[in-house]
Image (cartoon, rainbow, N blue to C red; front, side, top):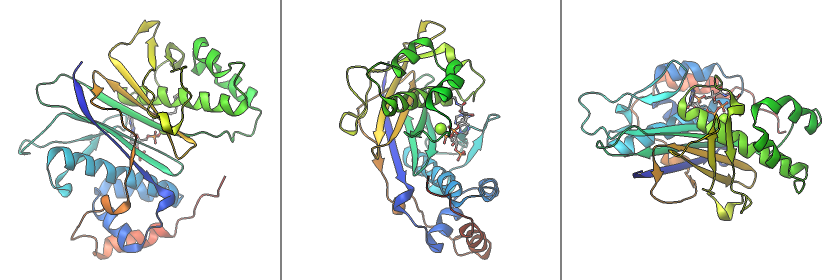
Length: 292
Ligand code: COA
Ligand code: MG
C-alpha cells in the first residue's frame, strides 16, 4: 500500500471569541448555501463549529491544490458528505480525500493527498468528548447500545479492570472508530454496526503522549479488513478522535496540529459588505449552550 501525505488539523473553539471583523472574514469565504445552512443553528456554538469545519476544508484543498482559497468550490453528495469540485481548468488536481468532525470545543480535519497515479483511497474522521451525560445509569445506557457493538467490542469495554470512567472512555473510542469508518464510506447509519468489529491496541492506554495509537484492526462480517488502517488520538485530555484510512497509509505518525484562527481566515473583498456584516451581527445574537 502506498504511503500518503496526511494532514491532521484541529481547532479549539475555547481559544476563540469571535470579533465581528473576524466573523465577517470567515463568513465571506464560505458558499452561499452554507451560510443559509449555518444560520439555521439555534446555538452559536454549533454555528461556529460548522463554520470552522468549512474553513478547514477550504484551507486544506487550497494548500493541496495550489488554488487560491476563494476559487475552491465544494458540493455535498446525496448523504451530505462534502467533496471538492475540481474544475476542468484547475491547474493541479491532486486526488485527495478529507473529512471534518466537530464536537464540544473541537473541530478536526483529517486529509490525505495522493498523486494522480494512485487508485482509489479515502479518509474518515470523528471526535468525541469522553463524558457520559445521558441521565440514566451507565449500565442501562450500555444495554440500549448493545446492538451497536460486537460481543468482542463489549468484552473490551466491560473489562474487569475498567472502572466506570474507563468504560466510558473505551466506549467512546469504539464509537469514534466506527464513526470514522462509516464517515469514510459516507453511508451514515445505514450499516449494521454490530458487524463492524474493532480490536483496539490493548498494549497501551490511549494518552496524549502515545497519540496516535495505530495498532487497531477491523473485521467486517468476520472478515479482516486489511486495506484499512486506523489512528486513535487523545486531545485536550478528554477528547478521543479516530481517523480511518482506506487503501492508504500515512507517511508519518503525527499528532493533530492546533491551528490559530489567523491561519484559517483569508482576505476577502466581501467581508466588508453590508450583507455579510448584517448576517454576522445576527449570528452573534444566537445563544450559547450551557456548560455541561
Ligand atoms: N459522511 C461523511 N462525512 C459527512 C457526511 C457523511 N454522510 N455528512 C456530513 N459529513 C461531514 C461534514 O463535514 C459534517 O460537518 P457539518 O455538519 O458541519 O457539515 C461533518 O462530517 C460532521 O461530522 P461529525 O461532526 O463527526 O458529526 P456526527 O458524528 O454527528 O455525524 C454523520 C456524522 C452525519 C456523517 C453520520 O455518521 C451519522 O448520521 N451519524 C449518526 C450517529 C450514529 O449513529 N453513529 C453510529 C456510530 S457507532
Ligand atoms: Mg461525530
